[in-house]
Length: 282
Length: 282
Image 1 (spheres, rainbow over the protein chains, first blue to last red):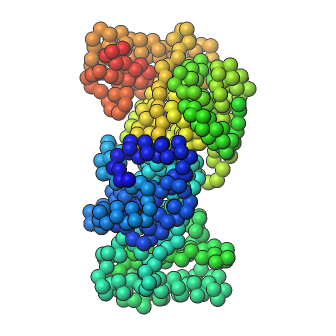
Image 2: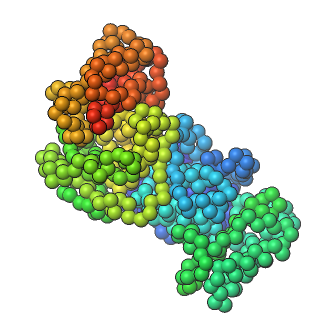
C-alpha cells in the first residue's frame, strides 16, 4: 500500500494497532539499494507491520549540498519495497511534510559537533526534526536505521532517550558490494574510475580491524594506519578519520571494549562515509 | 493514583488505551489553584482518563528566576486533584525527568522572540522540551493548558503542528479571583498591599475590552489606554503591553476578527502576566 497523506497513514496505523500489530518503521530518502532492503528485513524480524517512508528531506541538506541532484527513482523503489514485503509506504510531498512556515527545530548538542556534523552544519537538526515528525506520524514500536550513518544512529538514539520517545531504535549492519564498497545511494555519482578508487575506504578500515585483532589499542596508531592507507589513493581526499565511542561519540585515546572508527572522504566531487564498529566480543 | 516513575505511567496508560479510554493530560508545576482545577474539569469533559503532572521544570527557569523559591505544596495538590476527580498524577523527580546529561532541545523560533519570550531567553525551549517529553510519556489524546499563558498556548500549538504530535491542544479560559486578579501560583509572593495594586492588570484589560466593544480597532489607541491605566498604579512597572494575533503572535496595527492583548508587569519583585483574548463573535 502506498499513501502520500499523513491522515491516511494515521488511519492505517490505528487500524493495525487495534489488531495488536507491532509497527516497524524504516525511514529512507529512496533510491533504494540492498542496504535499505536489509533494514526492511530487520524490521520484519522485529515487528508485524512494516512501514517505509521515502522522503528526500530538504531541511537536512546544506545550501551547497546535493538536495536537487540527490538521486530519485520512486517507481523502482516501490517495486523493491513490495517485493521485499514492506506493508505500507509513505511518499509525502515536501508540502505535506512542511505545509506552513516551520518554526520548530529539534537540536541535539555536542555529539553533533563532530564527525559529519562538523562539516554539515544544521544537518542533524534537519534529521532529528524529520525523524521526530515521522515517529509522531507512524508512532512505531521499532524503527530501523543503517549503521553506515553511525553518527545518525547515535544522535537519534540520544534524541529518543532525551525526549522519552516511545520507540526502540535498531541499528542494522553496513551492507557492502562484493568488492567491499559500502552501499550508498550516492555511489551512483561515482565514475567507473572513482568507484575503483572508493574501495580505499573499506580497505583502510580493514587495516584498522587487522590492528585491533592483533591487540593494538592506541587510537592514534590505528588512525595513523587508516590515514596512511587512504593517502595511498591519489583520488581520495580525507575529510575526517576518527576513533570514538559509538554511543557518546567521545574521542578515544585508548580503545576499551567498544570503538567506532569513522571516516569521510571525497572521491572526486562525491563525499562518501564508511565506518567500522568494533567491540571486544566481536 | 499517584506515581513518580515514567515506566509506571506507560503501563497504566497502555492498560487504559487497551480499554479504548481517551487520555487527557494537564501538565502543571503544582501549587494548584482554581485555574488548574478548571483545566482538570475541561480535561474531564474532553477525555475518559484524566492525568495531571506536577513538575517544577528547572530548564524553563532562567538563572536569575525563581526556580528555587517557586511555591510547592505537594500534599495539598494531591488532595485537590483527588477531590476534583483526576485519575492519575505524575510527580517525577528532576532525576526521573533528566536522568543523564540532556543534549536535546526543542526550539520554536520567531513567536518565542516577543512578549514573555523576549524577557525570558530559553524559557520556551524549556517549556517545549518538557511538554514534548510529557506528551511522549503519556501519549495523550488531548492536553489542556491555561489561556493565561497565552504565548505558551500559541507556542505549544505551533510545536504540535510542526512536529505532527498526535494530540489535540485545548486552551481553557483564565480564572480570576472575585476581585478580578488572574489566578497564578506566583500570587502567593504578593504582600497584602501588592495584591491590591495587582488589580490594575485586569482593570487595564477591562479598559481595552470597553474600547473594543465600542468599536475601536486601532491597536495603538487600545494599547495607549492600557498603558495609561497601568501607569496610574505607582507600584506597577510595565514590562510589556502588546496587541497581537493570538495564533501567529504577529503585532497588529488594526484589529481584525481576533486579537490578544497581553501584558506583563512587575508588582514589587513579582512578575505577573494577564491577557484579554478578544474575537468579534465574543
